Image 1: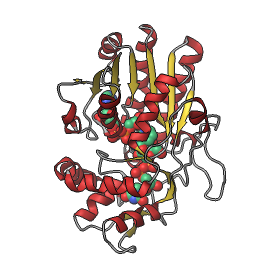
Image 2 (image 1 turned 60 degrees about the vertical axis):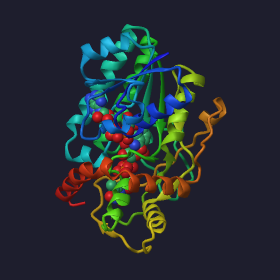
Image 3 (image 1 turned 30 degrees about the horizontal axis):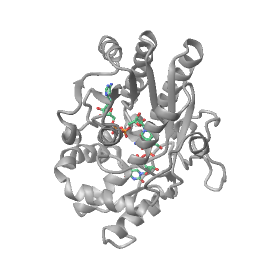
Image 4 (image 1 turned 30 degrees about the vertical axis):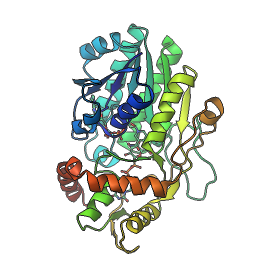
Length: 331
Ligand code: NAD
Ligand code: DAU
C-alpha cells in the first residue's frame, strides 16, 4: 500500500512514520510537509532512504492532486497545532487546517482514494472539573480557540464530504499526546527543556486545567488500527484514561528530574483556556483490538525526559524561538 503522510516532519507525524516502518514495513510511505517552524527534518533521520520526502504545502492544489493520485491512502496530520500561536496569529490555522484539508479531500474524491483525517478532542470544547462526563463521538462540536475552531471546521468538511460525495474517509479525535520529538513550545517539553537549563516550569493560571494524556505511540497505533479495522465514514475518539491537571503534570516532571515539588512559577493564564478534556474511547475499544501499550504516564514521562536530555541538538534552536514568542505574549 502506498501511503501519503502529511505533516510528518512534526511531532506525531514523525513518530507515526517511524512506528509504521516498524510495524507495517510493507507500506510505502511518502511524507508531505511544508517545513514550518514546527517541523524538524532530523526527526526522520532514522528512516532516511526508506521513505520519500516532499517539501510542499497541503494548500497547493496541483501538488496535492499529483501526490494523492499516486497513493492509495492519505493520513492527514498536517496542521498548525499550537493554541497560543492561534491566539496570536490565526491566519495560518485557517489556511492550513481548513483550506489544506479541503484541497486534500477534493483530490481524494477526484481520484477515488481513501483518507484518514487526524483531529483533536479540542473540537468538543471543554468539560467542568467535577463533571463525570467525557467526550464521545456524539458530543456536539463547541470549539473555543482559533486552533480548535479550525480543526472543527476541517472535521465538518470531511464529514460533509462523506455524506454528500461518499468520500472514503475515517476520522479520529485524540487527546493530548506526549513523547519524543514534540516541539518545545508545548507544555511537557517546554518544562523538561527549561529544567535542563535551570529554568522553573511555568504554570498558566492556577494550573487546575485537566488534560487527558496519551503516549504518542498509542495514538499512532490507534490510527493504524482504525485504518485497518475501522468502518469507513466513521469517527473514533482516541484516549487512554490519562486525566491529570497541569499542576500534577509539573509536579511529576519535577519529581522525575530531582527538583523540589514547589520549584515552579505561575504565569498569566491563556485567554479562553479550556478547563478539562476527557475521552471516552469505548467505541474504539469495542470495534477494534486497539489497547494502549503505555498506560503508565510516569514511566512514559521518564522515557520522554531521557529523550530530551539525550537529544539537546534537536530542540535547542526551536526552544530559543519559542521562548522569544512566549516572552512577547507574557507567558
Ligand atoms: P506539529 O505542529 O508538531 O506538526 C505539524 C506538522 O505539519 C509540521 O511538521 C508542519 O511543518 C506541518 N505543516 C504545517 N502546515 C503545513 C502545510 N500547509 N502543509 C504541509 N505541512 C504543514 O503538530 P502535532 O502535534 O504533530 O499534530 C499533528 C496533528 O495531530 C494535527 O492535525 C493536530 O491537530 C493533531 N493532534 C495533535 C495532538 C497533540 O497533542 N499534539 C492531539 C490530537 C490531535
Ligand atoms: O487536546 C489535544 C490538543 O493538545 C492538540 O489538539 C493540540 O495540538 C496540542 O497542542 C494540545 O493542546 P493544549 O493546548 O492542551 O496543549 P499545550 O501543551 O499547549 O498545553 C497543555 C496545558 O498546559 C494547557 O492547559 C495549557 C498549559 N500550559 C501550557 C504551557 C505551554 C501551562 O500551564 N504552561 C505552559 O508553559
